[in-house]
Length: 78
Image (cartoon, rainbow, N blue to C red):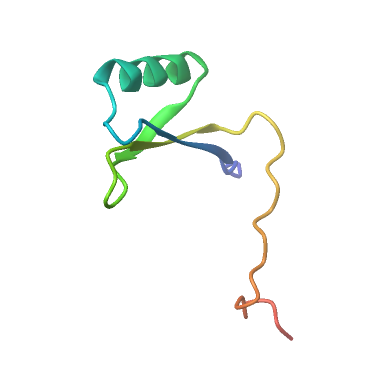
């Protein structure tokens, strides 16, 4: 029996302002996303910033587009 590959969809949000990010705002965002099935996989502060960026994923609920090919992608040249 062949295993089915899980496709993921991702969500990224940067919150806060020049004065920082309140823990309550981070917690509220994470709780809201959790109810929608999202799992935070990375939370970080961008360099030279007082904001917080949250990266989350969940199993795709719709068809996910194939990745865009970049001009430097040589894997499909013939």
